[in-house]
Length: 166
Length: 166
Image 1 (cartoon, each protein chain N blue to C red):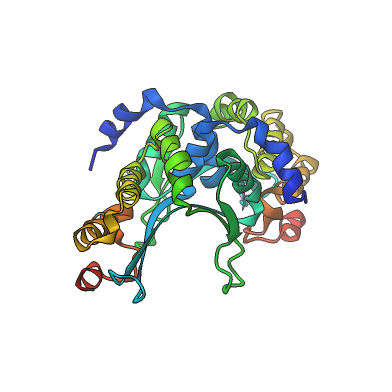
Image 2 (image 1 turned 45 degrees about the horizontal axis):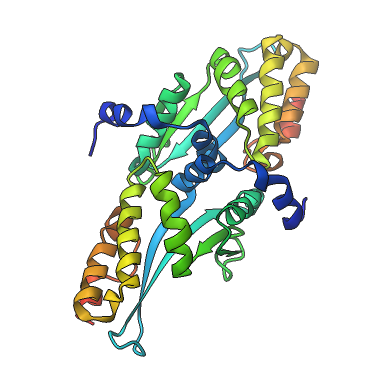
């Protein structure tokens, strides 16, 4: 078993942008995390996140992609579930998203419907850059857009209507 | 929702080989199916198979990859499980494996340990081309090699020792 450092050395030079897109097509997700947060003026916290999942068996791919983008971090996917030994590569920093992740998937687009989620994701990241999430109308628009992503929000735990009432 | 035909038209021209490798890194499997078969002289049937999984939401990717390789077929992954709506792209034809799949992954290799499984897979496909699976020693060698693939055969339902006794 190679250490993470050795894995990186072996890989980085050879990774092709389309390999990253192909891998992200299967394992990547553009997600807008939406939390109820009473400390926020609008009582809702919005966190755009790009993440890529993979089992530890193929962690080399995640380390390569992290090096490729030169941002983000890798963590254990579900710390509390011992049966789930998968890792996840995460980019949450808004500047990294705007300057690295978004331009990349504009240039090397996904083939599938996931690209539509990417476009909404991109729209929301730029709305937040323009501070539109700091007013009620902006928050509502972001929530509505978010629930059109990733199969119309079918994986979300909180109903959209509940968030819109906050 | 585009029909399969339209999906193919929209995609094929733009697919990049490294996209295929990246997608296969996450969703592809090189598998040696091994069945007990009393009709066979060696009582064991060996079927090398390359397959790529994906949910129907992203079936466009599978259709693109099928067109890219110009071989194989797409089917419902688990016909009997209504909850599993995933599709799978399958290549079982030995000539297609030798002439299309194996050369491709030699030229555009996977980054992860899956490439090691690919190399064993390739070795077995060529052994079978030389008819080595028609004698006892060859069968034993193929079984032993097969159980070194994909995490040392941890997903296999039949114990290696049981097959070697046949």
